[in-house]
Image (cartoon, rainbow, N blue to C red; front, side, top):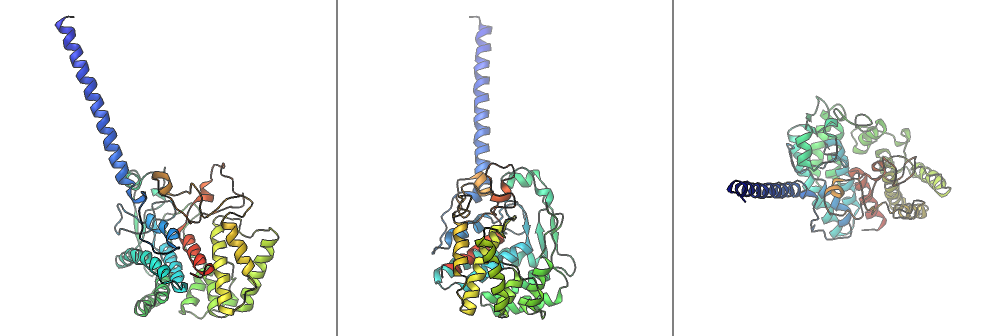
Length: 383
């Protein structure tokens, strides 16, 4: 072998080693970056004290961690977008669960989640933010740091006069938490605002906002306006008109509604076959339990039991909607964390077929609906 060939072989060997070391370095760096970017979704030991703890984990996994002006806010569903009005609604339902709970441990667990989120809501309200991210933030599913690098993060402030619904929800939440001072302060702020909050540059089905019926029910529930529940279409679930009916003692109205739901349910003419119908099932369980407590009427106990057994797997799809193995959520995409006792959207008008291309519509997790489910669990189990 000539000296020249030996030199070529030596250079080639060094080049191969350098390439291998470079590839190893790139792989190691990629692994570190991936681990760091998905760290909010890695399995963590949460210090919950009660049976409700598993149902609360998703709220902590959904706290934003990257590139938003206020940290710790709840991302909406499986998307890296924060909507103040949706989070305020979720906060309200969890505060109602706190108010209805009898177990000190359950109360403490719910309060822990609420206290973490109130830091976000307070920060957004102080700086007049209503939304982080928009439709342009959508794309392929990436860890949040990578997502924010590839997709724009546009942030939005309240428009003049906007935010009345948020202030009312926050005021009612503090009432549920026994904080009369903050409740009064935010009610006063609501009286000074003019309109409800509407999302900006979003979403697939159009802007997000409270429906006129829910908004009117909310104003009546807060006492800021004199609203007759009988003038509203009190649909099932814990929508605000239904809660107003509970508050105003509209027993006959609620009994008629629950009878109608029960008749359709027992005849297998499900009134809940639409996107997110599982959350109205959970809300109906909660409403029935509140009705039974308010009026000492247990006529619809069997309905509540049938509904919760449906969610737990006694359905034509043989699916436990509260422990679905692969929910549509970043936690499931990027890490090994599990979401036990977390409710997914459920069947829609096309049923529930795991092989369908848009199965995410059935398996997505929505936090306001999970909060309704937490409320249902607290009431149904007498926690």
